[in-house]
Amino acid sequence: MKVAGFERFEKEISAAGPGARFLVGGPEPWQAMRLRALVRDRFEKLGFEYVSYSGDDLSAGDLSRAFSEGSLFASGRLVRIADAEKASQACRRELIGLAGDSCDSALLVEVADQRSALAGRLEKTCLTFVCWDPFERDMQKWCARLVSESGLSLAPDTGQLFVEYASGSLVRLADAVGRAALYAKGGRLGRREAAGLLWASADADAFSLADSALSGDWRGALGKCWALVSAGEEPVGLLALLFRQWLRAEEAREAIRAGGGEAAVERVAGGRGPAARRLMEAASKGSWGRPWDMAECFASADTALKTGSDPFVTLAGVVRSLTGR
Image (cartoon, rainbow, N blue to C red; front, side, top):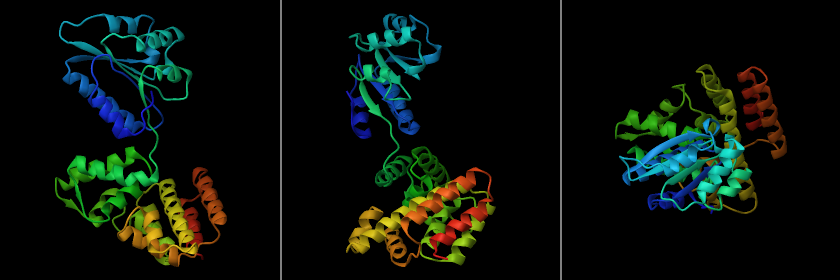
C-alpha cells in the first residue's frame, strides 16, 4: 500500500512492530536515507538485530535464512535489502514470498525504480513510499524543518537564501543547513553571514545576482556574476538558480497583468516578507523579453556551459537578456 506524505510515512514507521514490511523507492536520496535511519532506530529500540544486504550480493537462500534463523542476543531481526532490483530472479521470488509471510522479522526493501515489476509486486504487502524531489512550494517547509532540527536560528528572509541555494535539492539544502548550524553553534544567523557560508565569493551571492538581473540592474548583475564565477562558483548551478528565479518572476508578472496585486505576488513567493517584496519589484521593473525567447536563451546557455564555452561570457549573455539590454 502506498502512503502519501513523508510525515505520514514517518508516523507509520514510529508505530511499527514485529512483522512490519516497508518499501522505499524513487530518485530522491535524502528522504530515503532519513527513512532508513528511522526504520533502523525504531527496531533497535524494540531489540531487533539489523542485517543488511545488497541486491547484487544476494544468493538464493540468504533471505530465507535471515528470516528463519533466531538470534541469541536479539528479540527479532530487521532485514534490509538495498538495490533490490539488482537481485537475481531466484532471489526476487524469494523476497516477494518473504514479504508476504507473517513471520515477526521486519523488512525494509529499497529500490531505485519504483515502477519496476518487483516494486509493483512488493507494494501489495509492503507499506510503500516513493521519494520524489519536493515541489518548489514545499522547500520552505523542508527548510524550516531542517533548521528547527539543527537548533539553528535564522534572521528574517535568511531561510529563503537557503531555499534558493538548494535549487530544489534536499541533499543540498541539508548540507547547507548543517554547515550553517556548525558555524552558528546555536546562535542566530543573518543573511550576510549565511551568504558568506553558502557562496564562495564574499562580495556577492547568487541570490543577489538574480535580484539585480531581474530588476534590470545590468552593471550590478554583471559585477556580481563576475565575482561569483571568479570565486569558483559552479556556472551550471548559477544558471539553474537564475532560471528558477526568472520563472517565479515571470509567473508574478503574469499574475499582475491578469489584475492581481500584492496578494497574487505573495502567493507566488510563498508568503509575505522581503522575498515577496523583491519579487514584486522584479515583476514590476523587469524588462526581459517574451517568455519563449528567454526560455530559448536559458536552453542555449545550458548547452554552451556543458560543451565547454566560456562560463562568464555565457552567463553574461543571460544577464543581458534578463536586464533587457
